[in-house]
Image 1 (cartoon, rainbow, N blue to C red):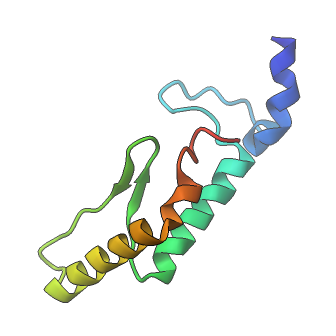
Image 2: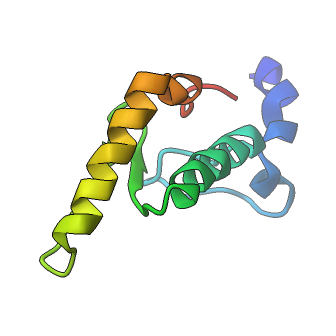
Length: 97
């Protein structure tokens, strides 16, 4: 158990409180927060709001309020992300810290 104490500093929330939430994935390390912000920023700059699911990818939930142009833009952006390889730096982001 003492070996794990070396990692405690990577989890900012543990400096301020006792983390006893048994239904979560665990405390988020600072590096994960930074990578998720980078991921969200990439999508926002493309004009798209979506959800990230660790080890599952992107979750898009189009609604009947979305126009065909918005959906077309999203598909075009997805194609660009795949063809340019921009997604590669986010692979395994949830697992790295």
